[in-house]
Amino acid sequence: MSSNLTAPTIPLFLSRGLAADHSMDEEDEGMNASQADLEPWQWPEEQWRKLVNRVRAGRRLRPAEWPGGMRCAVALSFDSDHETSDLRDGGKSIGRLAWGQFGNRVGVPRILDLLDRYDVTGSFYVPAVTALLHPEEQRRVVAEGHEIGIHGWIHELNSSLPYEAERDLMRRSADTLEKIAGVRPVGLRTPSWDFSQHTLQIEKEMGLLYDSSLMSDEDCYELLLDGEPAGVVELPVEWVRDDAVYFMMNRFSALRPYTPPTDVLDIFRREFDAAYDEGGIFQLTMHPHVIGYRSRIWILEEIIRHAKARKGVWFATHAEIVDWAKQHAA
Image (cartoon, rainbow, N blue to C red; front, side, top):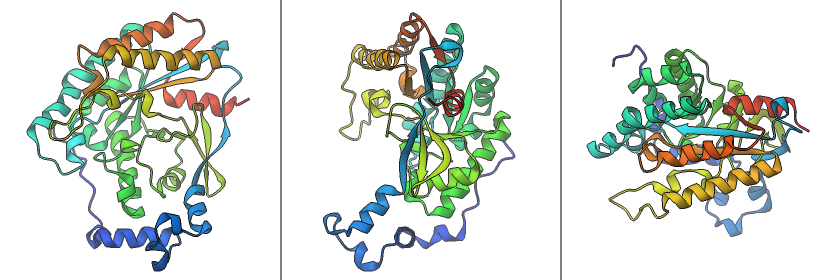
């Protein structure tokens, strides 16, 4: 389908090459040439402290209770990577592009039908290229009451980009999603949860409500940028609550699925039960081209059924949960 939205113009600085990008990062981190040549165990304290303290977890934002006296919040999320899983690395494999298209043709419709059947909402994180390839998918997601969030331009790795390129791509991604879906996204999930030294600064400049890429806690927390509150809330993720680590496969590498679906359900269910007992958040990350198969989609359904069988469970989008946690932190 054609669109009047165009790919980002490649700025001149992108032609400087990898060495220039590395030197720019070194300047940003206050490293001189001699420090850059040191092994990590040789770093002066100032250097490793600056790296560690660039982005840190601040105040925990666990509310005393959830809306209407609910006990636990459930945040279901879906990363609609589709064809960008291969495109981001310059891949041209027709087979892997077809696998990505499965996410659009089968995965997302199957997920949306399931969410509708149980009357629950979720958050969908969408690379801009995915949105340009499948605009009707994004319009359906929004029309059915779900959230659209930023997930990069072409699922690029933020840590490989200089500041200007990362900022340019993030802003263009937000603009593209708004034009296609009709709603301005308020949250970011970095592709592959790859968070650069500049990502939080860019999120702050863009006025985003939240990020969902980091793992410092299980509750929402404020993000600190160089020791100061950035005004951006983190709704944390975790690999143990991600379908891809259990099911992803690459036939050209040693990466193979190793966990039976019944065991994945058991892990997710235990995570939910613990969150419920603590009065916290159960956050789950899934991918339409991973969880969307007939032999796996039942895991999502069983998690929803299990949660709905407990009293006081609030299913909400990431944005709704962050907004509540921010306003009602104990």
